Length: 218
Length: 250
Image (cartoon, rainbow over all chains, first blue to last red):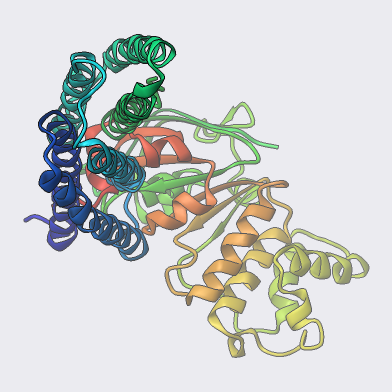
């Protein structure tokens, strides 16, 4: 006989909601770079509109966590799971906010040519997307193999950011008329770098959820 | 003050047909609260009762060692009366004697020959330690059974303290009490551990988590896991412990 059936179902639902939120945040971040590359203002506006869905989910998940703690007194892996959910939704929300910030930049610069061909920015996006995907899989499968190397992967993103920053600064020095576009692109790169950091935070929490061990990835 | 250590402790009931405790080895630290948890019939109460040899009143056979203060209490030389004075016990249902508050607390010391002039001080001290003095100091001659369940349970604790034990065993002391009385007993346990070693059986895992420093998880007569409470409830090492504390048993 399975005991605490409802409780276990509630926990499963909680995990599904977190995965749904994660998927939305990931799609938003992906679309933000797509909109940038394709100068797609419609897609950028859509990201901003859908941001509120993610905000609502964050509140809903937080309420579910509080309710489970209050009513079910979870222990051990359940307690770690709920604690992890409460923490990582903040990072997921930040990722979607950063995607929104990139979308706003797209709306401002979509009608002008970029000061340089965009190569490293899509690369940063690809890497951070990979990290978010691996987080969501690790969370869903309770398997940490794919997220243990996040420190190294984040270092690659950081290095790309430095490269982009140097390049854009050179362009700004050489061509002051490009400053507007270049500074917007600099912020896009910074936001992608931050998304990588949030993925590391999420990965640390998932390692704790699965193993009980607190390991800082950065 | 005591430490308790058991070695290859086995307890059987009914002509050794029921093997209630299987090779239990544990070291209980002094001045700490140790909680025993596990499903009904797991052996936790049997273990508790083996610490003051109460099991033998129930026809149990005990093999192995229970070492208290470096001395095996099953070596045949132990004076059981003295042992139970050193290892006091508080039960699930408050069981005050049908006499006054004063006489309840004074009962043990009188038997052990405490002089009359010392009794008043001892009764007051015991009631104070049990956080009951302020509620009963003007009602010392009233019959104990008139008081609330929570007060009666604290009276039983005062009665146990009055014979100056080193270890106090609590067998689900709050299961018959309301939440406020429970909170009072829990606060009391945290106070008492500074002077006594406390072992508590509880069905309430949140209570174990709240009051104890160490927790032992029993299952079918075996000690499955023993460790610091904060570790055991956050990241148990054994899958069976995890299944039990997360409520997935059955």
